[in-house]
Each structure stands twice: as structure tokens, then as C-alpha cells.
Image (tube, rainbow, N blue to C red; front, side, top):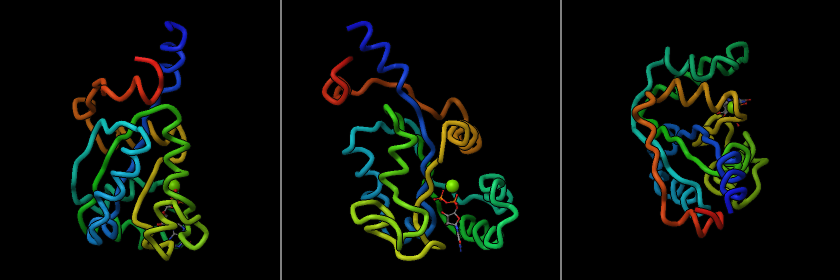
Amino acid sequence: MVQEQEAHAAQTERTFIAIKPDGVQRGLIADIISRFERKGFKLVAIKIMVPSKEFAQKHYHDLKDRPFFNGLCQFLSSGPVVAMVWEGEGVIKYGRKLIGSTDPQRSEPGTIRGDLAVVVGRNIIHGSDGPGTAKDEINLWFKPVELVNYKSNDEKWIYGVN
Ligand code: GDP
Ligand code: MG
């Protein structure tokens, strides 16, 4: 059991997920949160905010040479965004699966973008694409004190360990 607990702890990770202004305005907050929650992932931070354009540029700095960068940052800063941190085994990679492909036209039905979005410029949600970006994005959007450590009663049923 101790070994299983250690394995569980080692595989537990955190990812940054944001519902973009289109998802917020379209009333999709609860649906999106529900998909992560029902899967068995744990919400450890959440807030709603309107990021400045400079903040959006920091968040998307990797894309600064892309032709859509300016419009993307303009859009992200155009209204409220729900910023979240989700925790669980494999949550970084599986979070991307729940979200679907960048272009909703290529996203499978059953994914968030597949079910709820149509075009790439309004694909309603962001998710970190790897451990490095997850760490950077969590640090950009949240102060350490905003990340809550807690045990959920369901964990023993989700993972088979306490
Ligand atoms: P993601 O990780 O799946 O969100 O995709 P990327 O990191 O490649 O791009 C970030 C965001 O930029 C995407 O979610 C889209 O909103 C937007 N984006 C990506 N590619 C395009 C594009 O070709 N055109 C437009 N208008 N927006 C794009
Ligand atoms: Mg990305």
C-alpha cells in the first residue's frame, strides 16, 4: 500500500486550464468544469478575471511570431476568463484529450472543443501542453497561496489509494 501511495503521489501533477471569454459569454463554465470534475480530477485553484493585453501576451509568448498573435491576445483580454488549476494523475496530457484538437473542426465529438466550438479563433478553452508550460502558466496566473492543498474523500475511490 505504501508503494501504491508513493506511485500515486509521483504521478500526481497539476495543469493550467482557462475558459476563454467566448466560453464564459456562452455560459459554458459549468459544463467545462463538470467534465474535469466527473473524470476524477481535483480543482485546486479558480478565479475569474479580465487579463490585460500585456498579460495575454505573456501567456501566449511562445506564439509571438504567428500571424494570429495580436488578434489572439486582443481576444483573450476582451472579457472575463475563468482561470483554473486542476490536479490528478496524468492531468496535463489527459486534460488536452478532454479539450480536443486546437481546431474544433478536427476535434472528436465528446471533447470540449468537438462538442462546443466550431472555429479555431473561438475554441473556448486553453490547457497547458506539457509539464514545463503547466508550471510556467500556473506561476503566471496564480500566487502560491491561491493553490489549495486538500484531500478529497473520493480519491480512495478514484485511485484505490488514500
Ligand atoms: P492550443 O494549445 O490547442 O490552444 O493551440 P496553440 O497553443 O497552438 O494556439 C493557442 C491558441 O491560438 C489556440 O487555442 C487558438 O485560439 C489560437 N490559434 C491557433 N492557431 C490559430 C490559427 O491558425 N488561427 C487563429 N485565428 N487562431 C489560432
Ligand atoms: Mg497551446
